[in-house]
Image (cartoon, rainbow, N blue to C red; front, side, top):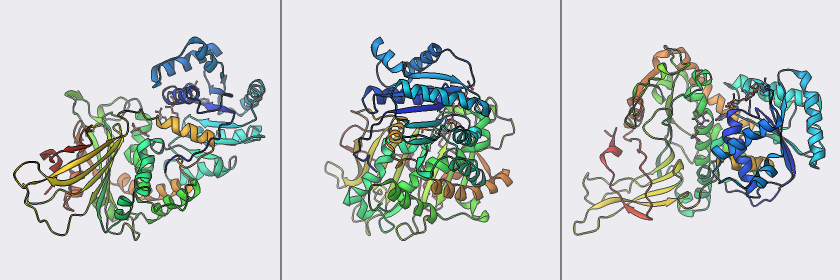
Length: 518
Ligand SMILES: NC(=O)C1=CN([C@@H]2O[C@H](COP(=O)(O)OP(=O)(O)OC[C@H]3O[C@@H](n4cnc5c(N)ncnc54)[C@H](OP(=O)(O)O)[C@@H]3O)[C@@H](O)[C@H]2O)C=CC1
Ligand SMILES: O=C1O[C@H](COP(=O)(O)O)[C@@H](O)[C@H](O)[C@H]1O
């Protein structure tokens, strides 16, 4: 959906739990700074950052400043601008597990609201460990912080539970203090420009919308590949695995954007209703289907950009016998009129050869090939929606090769979304939406619960069958079993190609694009 034309800037107080954590430093401070600098939030705002560590106010403001200087996409400003931005930040030391500290927090909040003449619009942002989410929501209500004359909103980070029962328990806890429409569950993929563009491309172009169904589409591929490994997050990741970390949220959200019906209007509830219908129509795999429709893998040692990369099991904090997956591929079906019989192939993994997120729509061929070409078959029409890090569109068609020979070759029309204009960071868009009260790009409870209900049976099978784990070399494109998933159906993964700047660019499909093709 495109951003609605709203201008609901209101003064606010942000109460940031995890106020000096990694997410706050790398994403939230730069996002706030960018919104403030560009006049996209109200000028009257303040931020209370919370953590257990004891910090002087100046120390905290230095942390904010250093984070912005390091991670912001904007050049830094004059000292005067800095102090106008930093003066709004206040640090409070509080152990959120200790209920007795919340009274002090209430006092701080009310004090700041008076100082800045704020109308008690409170944005509670939980950038802390998920195990603390529920308790914080409960305490906020207990102490009266949720009783406001203005609005109150809860922004909650991922992961939202680790399976359906834990997600339900968490949801029950937070809905004891906040209404569903006050809850903003973050899936940062929904803040990405080109994820938001998927539905615009579909619903604003009769060309695509007319063909967006099983009569014309052969299959859909969604790839979210990363070159990074587990990094410093082994404690979390070795329990989550790629299925919970990427598939339950980001991949499924992209599937809903590709597959949903047009909403009756551009309102969060209408859009959300259509997304939910997709999740309901997603075929749930029975135990015996998992092995034939899902692949899980773990990286072994390899070479990335010519440099040696260690195996997952040799990474810091990972047990040497870990059977956790760092790669998932799947073949899914959406059982409704529009998508009946169209496979959705998905894959995601760490330590792959490329950092790339993209959606590929492969269209069916023409009824008869009238032309001779090298392989005696026509390349398929492909619509590639590039999400990350390149943003744009590529549309592959067939055309006559310039020159004498009547040869038909694939050509690509390219559009680059971020070549000339830098896109906002996902957190910028999402923070702004939360401050404007727009929940379009946040996940609602029934989306989250349906996503877990789809994922849980797969997880159960994999947890019981450790032999389901395949291996792939770091720096490769994943386990061969993921290629076989498509090859069985006569398809192959479309290897992401580097972005091309020209509008129309002749490009024959090279041999690398044919990898895995029978
Ligand atoms: N970092 C990232 O890139 C991403 C993070 N997330 C999510 O964001 C959340 C935060 O992650 P991240 O910033 O990486 O985590 P960090 O561990 O870096 O930061 C969490 C902060 O919470 C504070 N904290 C921990 N326990 C308590 C407590 N009992 N009371 C008060 N404060 C506490 C810590 O400060 P202190 O030690 O001073 O108490 C710490 O600075 C998690 O839910 C994570 O899943 C989601 C996507 C990406
Ligand atoms: O949520 C997560 O996403 C990142 C990948 O995000 P991207 O914006 O860089 O594509 C992933 O590395 C991380 O494991 C996961 O928790």
